[in-house]
Image 1 (cartoon, one colour):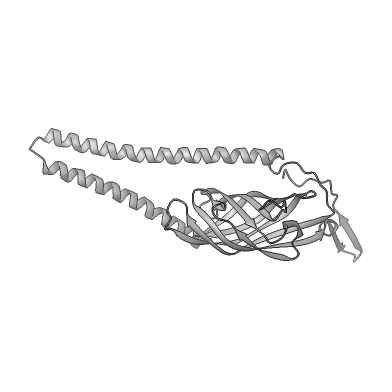
Image 2 (image 1 turned 180 degrees about the vertical axis):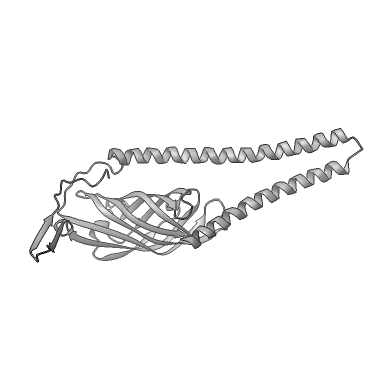
Length: 272
């Protein structure tokens, strides 16, 4: 963790230094131009230098304002999502019921990340995402993100929250595709926030996966907003467990007596 933090801080420091160096170069060029045409009028020379410094200072202030406006916009968008989670509306309505708990795990096997703004920039995406079934109807499947760990271009990310739903890749109506949405936060400075969207296709309906299946991650539908387009392959696995198995805990008391503790299904564990 410390090494990751140091690495990202060094990157940010280099960008800041590069920006300041560029400003110095601009100032030196202007100053040289002024000195080359200097005729001995000290007042005019000082006025031009002062004007240049004001211009550079205004440019820096504009950059800071733009960054602040972007941060406020991101915070506002994030707050709306948080409000939906708090109100219990983020995942939508739950229609079906089930006596078993299905867990889906997506492992990124070979995924290329390609720069959105710089087409020559290329890296890899590694990691995993784990979902629990939120709702399973006759054909549709909704998943709730429980855990994820993603590394892109040596920067680690955690998922604050997310969801997924099944769709059809063609006209057959077979729900063989999965659309994933997740909110990412970098694990170093905890300041970079982005939306992850993944569209993937499987060889069979998602809900009918038996064990595991290789999936294709589609470009350009799959991306990390403002940063990367994603393209490659992964493995989607499904495990099924009984709800009773996940809510009952059997143990012994201090006297060696065997007893079982059962959690009621109606107990709420949160707003999700």
